[in-house]
Amino acid sequence: MKDKTFIRNRWFEDIPIGEFHVFGSHTFSELEIIEFGEKYAPEIYHIDPLKARETIYKGLIVPGWLITSTWMRMMVQYMERFAQGVQDGRRNGAGLGLQNLIWHADVYPGHTLTFTYEIIEKPDKTIKNKWGIIRSRNEAFNQYNELVMSFTADILAEKDPEKLDSSHPI
Image (cartoon, rainbow, N blue to C red):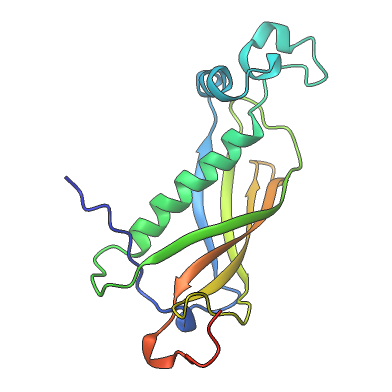
């Protein structure tokens, strides 16, 4: 069984503001939309292609939570590859939360979204005398390069123990 320990290859101090990643792309199928909709978003425009034609969307659309969940899956897969082979004990931190999640445009079956991540800020805080905060802008663009989802997220990143100032822990 594969080791599920998530480790990273840099300390908080080594991660620059402005770093940008493209996690990859995903094309949404009608079946995927319906299965997710039936389980988590049972709205007619997520589960019934025929009745969805009678809604304001004029067809089946991808639930916003499926878009967001797909971003999460792609981010984890990408970051696992990014840290592959690193065994120095440093770990990814937990997510602290999302802010300003917006689904800007409808996504239909067959649409392909590309998911991106950019570090936009590193607030000057130390949590539990070990973790810094990485704030990122996260976006999804459709095949027409239109923004369809955006949010900011805060995650913890382990600080270099040799550079910690233990006089001001939060």
